[in-house]
Amino acid sequence: MNVAALVEVLDTRLPNTPFVRPGGSLLIMVGLPGTGKSSLVEAMGQVLPFVVITTDEIRRFLPQKPIYTPAETHFIYELCHALISLRLKRGQRVVFDGTNYVAAQRQKLYILAEQHGAILAVCHVLVAKDVARQRLEKRIIGQRREADMSEADWAVYQWMVEAQEPVERPHLVLDTTVMPLQVLAQELQAYWLACEQPPR
Image 1 (cartoon, rainbow, N blue to C red):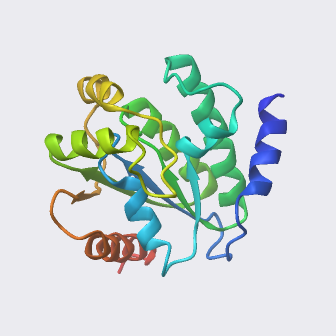
Image 2 (cartoon, helix red, strand yellow):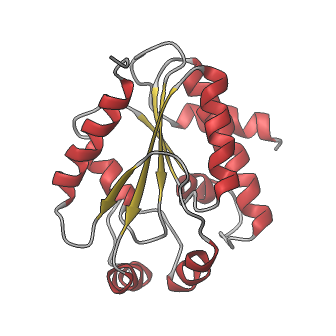
């Protein structure tokens, strides 16, 4: 199945959300496995309508077991970018939930948002290394949230932490080590909505 056909199928699996503005609004989540990106997005989704496009879900849709190679990652991001483009054309709010740890990956998203005239917001999620390890070890033994679809383990975290590149644009930083998720989700929502407001 080619990219266009896959995108068409994947699009039907995503919910329809309200039109918010021409060009839509894109929130890019950045952070290593185990930082709590998806949990934050899930908590925010209880009060704010948006469509979530996540690399983890796309990986699970494909027939082969995730192996996190550069070629696989490139293909996954290609699919995600195509889905993001579709939803921005419809004027929707879109959250891209992926590690986005490489600057070149983020740059493609910045260009995509600019092409659509979309609002752009970026959130970098952090957590203490020992907490990330505990979370990832629990995931592997089956102690995970029902909505957690990631297969990334501690080994994936370790090579990603060495390869990650700093976020070069203005962005929100959230640390999930101690602060309750609901509090951080409210902060993330407020930040995104503030980004959507026209400059004074």
